[in-house]
Image 1: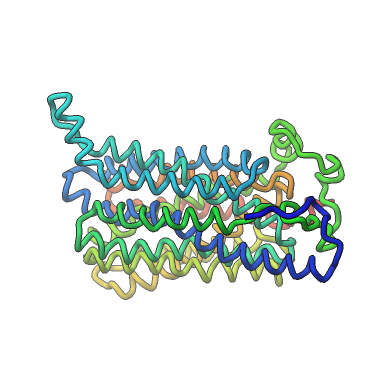
Image 2: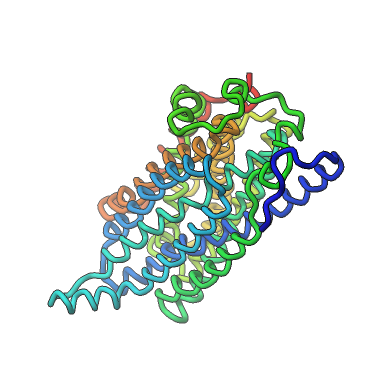
Length: 452
């Protein structure tokens, strides 16, 4: 893709408006397709787990440790990727991340023959689980190259009055990818075995990685357009006034825009507890529905897809509400959603087994109230970091989220093995209450308040 002239190289205002519209539309559909693909080689593990439990004869705690390794690596990687993305062309970064994540998915599918080969060389049997853990963790590292570029691009192309709505639209890529792999992966596993759940999505993702490389753009300035603040006639951001528009070093980003940023840290802690709930359902819903509620493998995948499907509408609606009705108070909207999530979790906790329609409806409602705050927390983190440190701040928010997700892996696995599924749901309720507390403490903060 040819790069445009230097920043400000186009003088015709009407042409600038047309080019902004062109790139915004292109950016939206490219990011939706691109990030949905990341989930094809990410949530395939959750679909394969019930089949792996039968094939390998392992415990839920064993699988839980693999689930915990992923968010640990992903969380650190997302934080590092955020800092890197504020300083590089994200077109290359995001494309390469997807390509390498697809390669990891292939190696996970090849884990049993790799274990057999290594065992033959060592003269003893080797479980494929450590090999799966290694490549799933590496997958987490490369997956971390997915969302920070989006955070940077969205905050550089859309004004605060537009950002919530369009971020919500792009955030629906999570659920698009999840629904595709939940339904398609379950069919593949039932027909061709669990390894196919890793091979087929990997092939798709290689093609999408090349699509990203050809189609994605970087900042408005890279396309010869004026910066967003100039085009939208926004008040100069607080960091631009201080820094004079110069590219900041990593140390300056942290010293000026991250460490003293109380609003950002509150979002981080709210996201920590929110992700225990989100990833708890993300990781364990298919297994829970089969073991505790009597669903079939294909049925449990369909029910789990409702949890994800609700997120498409939740993200868009939450973004729109925060833009149009809440005056940019993302955390206030999050707090309302979290209070309603607690109510939905209480109903799920006491619901009797054997009622799959009821389980499906409750998962739909829970997914709606989980993904609304999940969308807005990312927006709030990026906004509080400002345009100069948006990816770094979003990466930090994501890091905290995935540190919380660690507890939804081995922690929930231990709870299930020792106390049962009911105690795991109660654990989610407690975490949702903690998240509500931190969102409430940040109730009145907006992006504009950070510009003053």
